[in-house]
Amino acid sequence: MRDRFGFLSAVVALMLSAGSAASGAPSGSDAGGAATEAATTTAPATVSSPPARPDAAGAGTAAPRVAVTLFKNVRIFDGKAEKLSGPSNVMVRKNIIERISSETIQSPADANVTVIDGGGRTLMPGLIDAHWHTMLVRPTAAQMLSADLGYTTLLAGAEATDTLMRGFTTVRDLGGPAFALRRAIDEGVLPGPRIFPSGALLTVTGGHGDFRQLFEVPRIDGMPLARMEQLGAAIVTDSADEVTRRAREQLMQGASQIKLTASGGVASPHSPIDAITFTTAELQAAVKAANDRGTYVAAHAYTPAAIQRAVLAGVQCIEHGQLMDEATAKLMAEKGTWLSIQPFPDEFAHIFPPGSDQSKKMLEVMAGTDRTYQLAKKYHLKTAFGTDIVFAPELAKRQGSLLVGLIRWYTPGEALGMATGANGELLALSGDRSPYRGKLGVVEEGALADLLLVDGNPIADIKLIMDPARNFVVIMKDGKLYKNTLSH
Ligand SMILES: [Zn+2]
Image (cartoon, rainbow, N blue to C red; front, side, top):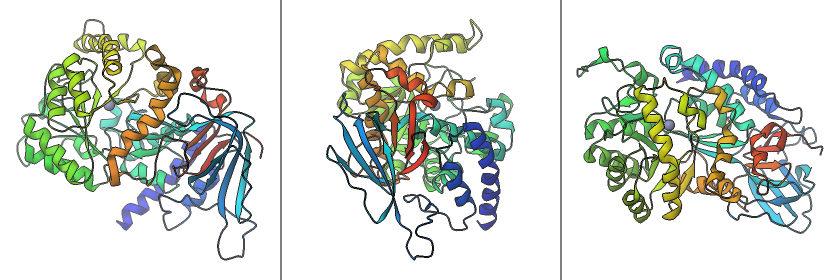
């Protein structure tokens, strides 16, 4: 363990320069300073309390003064109501939103207070991406499989910093070896979003996410794991017992939920999209392993048959679902199953060679997107927003634009509510397996202080979200200011 920790420290130390250079963090940010401080600290900081800032006033005294941020004169989008509050003041103590009031809040005398004069701007919860792959955004698929995990972790660290600077303060990671990066971010080693990791996604032989080559089958008992399995990106399971073991392995490493692929997919070479992959017994084994540990299973599934089998086996969140039908939507409504879905950007229609199997699958899914959103609205499905950007660093820069794409079906208030309050409710399904103690996705007293100050009213003009560098003038995560372009 000691060796491992030493190696990790070396890796993340390298990350620091890559991360801050890529993000172009503004001068108002204290992220770089805090990260450097944490990197040179021997004992890791706890998750809930950010590394203490250097405190000149308290130097020489026993207890460092607590950090307080006071937002004055802001209008609040709270992540739920589709309107802004009247002029308000919000006080954050350490990492918690302590007080919200239309009355003046006095600065506490016993704290290090940062005052931010909001000037009537909008304070809203940090954005949440409910379907993200922290480790798979920047590399190509071939690089992910062939490169050293240290290299791809460095890429992911730089991307994580950029993700946070786009205003996404939390991501639910649905497959990939993200445990080490989550730890480093939570220890304050480098800036990045909160990560709810799944670890390796579970698939079956020939299922979505089985990126093995054909020469790697048949697999014989006792053979070494395939490369994608060694990396912790995806793992093949072909019986209920194997599912149990592999699910438990992810949970042991800190998975906050289990991800499996219950139907074929678009990009996978060997999985027809209409294929149902896991058997009911296998699905139930995953659900049991997750439930016994106090959490849940999220299943990638497109077709009615695959979705229904997963839902009936106890899966609590369906990823994608773009080919669902009326009966399936009804079943999900009855069972209270979440739908975590995304409108793929229009250019996806052309990303695969015309006429190829993958191109046909992509077009089928894109055509189903509108129908599925209509069904989700008709049956009031609990609906989450996630982008599912993989192997596409340029597209990641448009993470917020993909959210804005929801206005084809939803009001701006509903779309923003999905990426904040609703996604926060989905994250809460992880219960005590959440790496973070406290409520996410809302601006309310007692919630975790993940906040954006927007230069304008995003409910009146949601397109503000598309240009975070310009329009998010303050980015706070866990009570810590990562960006602050306003003078104190
Ligand atoms: Zn995905």
